[in-house]
Amino acid sequence: MDTRALHPDKPDGNPWIAVSTGTHYGMTSVQWDQSGPAVKLAVVELCSWTTKKGTVTATGRKIARTPWDQLSPAARRVLSLHGILP
Image (cartoon, rainbow, N blue to C red; front, side, top):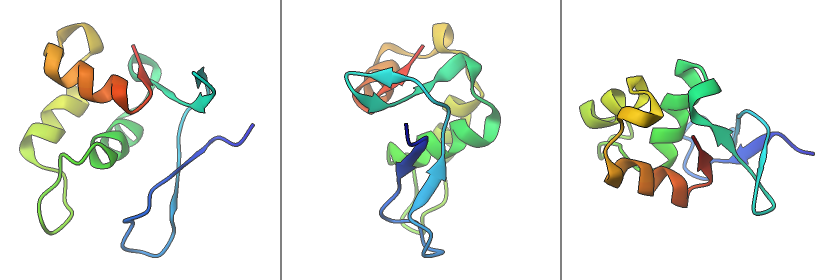
């Protein structure tokens, strides 16, 4: 199984980021509580918590630091829609 997720807007020309493996409805997924800070930041970037310049927003950084059970229902919903598991 391929363990990379496509990131079409990556400015460095490399369209792939590494993510943890797991399947969620046949997709590669990330298990939030088992992921490290770099993976979580990449996930919030993919979920569009970014500025116009492409950097992660303060909200995105806060989400990346927060355990799954302490995230707001809205943040969990957005992450879940992107295939993120608790």
